Image 1: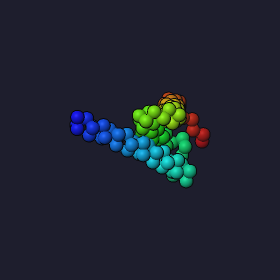
Image 2: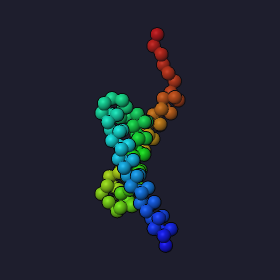
Image 3: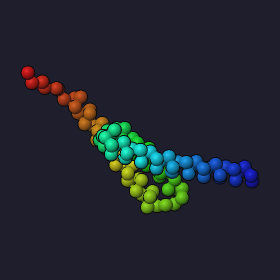
Image 4: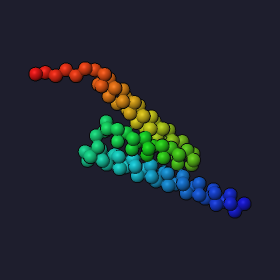
Length: 102
């Protein structure tokens, strides 16, 4: 029985750390963008948002805070869509012949 209690405590600690890490990552991403260290359309900004959101989803789903789980799921989805759209645009640019004006 003591092993199960220790396991439950460890899981809860990991869930809490996940939530705090997610919150810090989202705050850092927002701060870096607000002070022009990252562009909002950069892959780095989007990946920070995705990572932070996933960590918060783990935390809020575990504690059954459904409004926050929904919010972070949508936030994560926006980041994923932005990454996919960016990748598609990059592929299209590579396929298109570059026209130079002399």
